[in-house]
Each structure stands twice: as C-alpha cells, then as structure tokens.
Image (cartoon, rainbow, N blue to C red):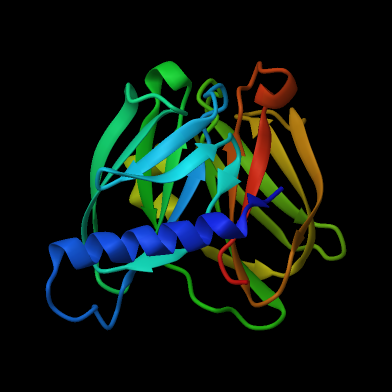
Length: 236
C-alpha cells in the first residue's frame, strides 16, 4: 500500500536545503526538521507541488508519498496545482520546528482540498512491538470505530469516535500507540454496530517500526476513488 518513488525523496531533500540556504546565511542546523508529503486527495488530477515558490515535486499522483527529507527549521510555503498549471488548490505555510518530523497530507475532495501537518512523535519500539496510529482522511465517512485485531494472538487495539481529519482539533488523536508486531485484520464499524462495514485483511506491522494507517478515498467511491487505506512506515 506504499506508493513511493526514491527520486522524489532526492528531489525534496535538495529543495529543502536549497530553500534553507536562500533564507539562512549561517551553517546548517544541527537538528534539522523532517518533512514527509502525502497526496491523499482522491479525485485530484496529477498535481505539481511547489515549496517556497519552487516547483519541487512534479506530476504527483493520488496515493504517492515522498519519504522523509530534511532541511533547516523555519517557514515553508507549500502550494499544489494541477500538473502544468498555476491555479493553486491550496497555499499554506507551515513552521517546521528543530529536530521534529512532520507528515503533510493533501486531503479532501479536490474542490475542498486542504493541507494538514501532523507531527510524527514516535519512538523506536522493542523488536516484538510496533508503534501505530490511525488518521481518517475519508471526507464522507461519519463517526466510526476502528479495531486492529492480531491474527495470531488476542491483541486488539480499538479506537472509537473517530471522524474525518479529527486530529486537527484533537491533537491526541495523532498519538502513536504501542502494540505487538504481527499480522492484523483492521476492521471499521459504525458507532453502535458490531458488524464491520469494511475489513482490511492481513496488514503486516513489523517489529521495531512505527506506522501510520490512514483512511483514504470516498466512503461511497468506486474504482480508484473507493475507500481504502494507506500504510506509512516511518522507520525503514
């Protein structure tokens, strides 16, 4: 479920350091900020992403992520437009703090697209454990419960009362939780229902890693815009 291209990481790293050199004549920061970009707007066309006025990530498709790139802490202006055009869907500036990792998601339908930044505050778990969090970026899904069920043990993680982009106003919902590593079936329930309306089977969560599971697509979508999940492995 990870759609990542190594050349994007190289390009993004070069852009971030180029941006910092233009804005800071001193030496590079010893604790750079990290940025990880995800295009999660399900009905967006192929897009171009600009950072500090520079075309940085051309021809980005839905579901693509960049991996982490690093640069000097400070303000970064991000813009996104249909590839080859400059009518921007979103223009937003983020302040990146020293020594902090961030994931920046472009979410919602293309006509309502927004950019959200989520701090990636994870630790390296033991070899038999993982850190995991859940983010809901499915814009037409109502309040629901998500349950992670380990297929080999009785380990279960259940998160209830979740909704679209809810970590933007309840920051604790972007926290990571430590669970045992292994294979999981991930089930989604409407509130008050004991029957899952969606199950993602056999999701591999490897020990000593940190993961974000994010819901994407539309609840009533079809084809490439159908509801699904993205899996980000933060520790390679």
